[in-house]
Length: 182
Image 1: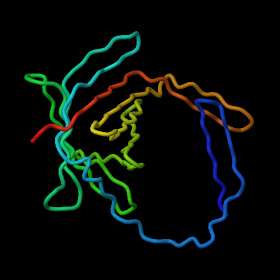
Image 2: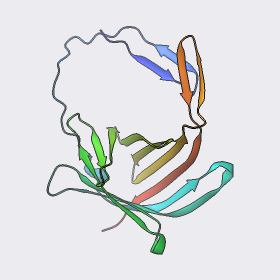
Image 3: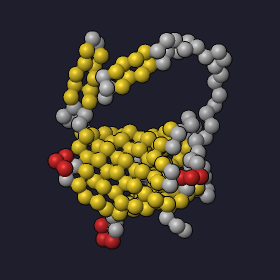
Image 4: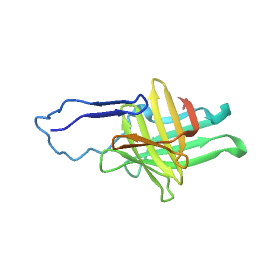
């Protein structure tokens, strides 16, 4: 028997459903994760960078996703800026053996990722910062949404034996990308 548990901290709602029984649970090996072909291609557009106090700026952004030829997985090439300030990050999105993905930054850093419907999500920590990314396909658009939180000034609260730690966002980057005609 399993219990379905939903915790939505943003609304203060805690809901526990009735026990749910799954008649015949079978343990199958997870299949290798794949990205739908609708994700493949070169995506370009603008990225807005938001900071506290209303500061923002806009720069060019791109993402190239192609199946790898030599192994299972995809190129995951992120481009920020243009000209002298252009940054190219040549990563790979690789399926793991658990039905999910890893973003391989090709420098020893790998970041766990999971595809839910048409949204690829990650959460990772660098020093005192937690970074959440969401790559979401919506019709003919790919949205890259990255929010950074700092753990140094975490708000620690709780009630009746439940500890809750929340972190304030310190920056957000949102890119709205369209498929580049090839």
